Image 1 (cartoon, rainbow, N blue to C red):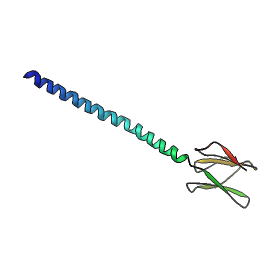
Image 2: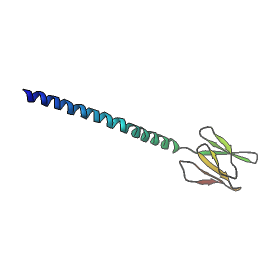
Image 3: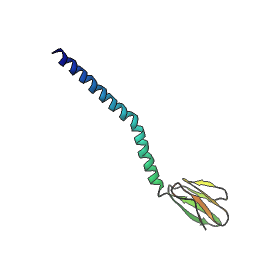
Image 4: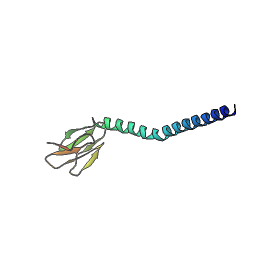
Length: 104
């Protein structure tokens, strides 16, 4: 009789430790899982990020999708999540979603 009671207590302790270990693993790994979801969401939304260009007089403006716009200058400037500049003949720009390119 006595050994049945001891084995029941031993089994309860082992099960409690297993439950605690599972909860600890979830608590430790959840921020990493959430970070991975956030990274995938951001990279997916950046995959379609692009600039549009327009002219007003002699000045060229870049328009980003998030409502940001700026004059394209002869030095690299940030426009939204992109970098753009004008060398006099071409407009060069680079966004997180594409390779550097130019527009004549």
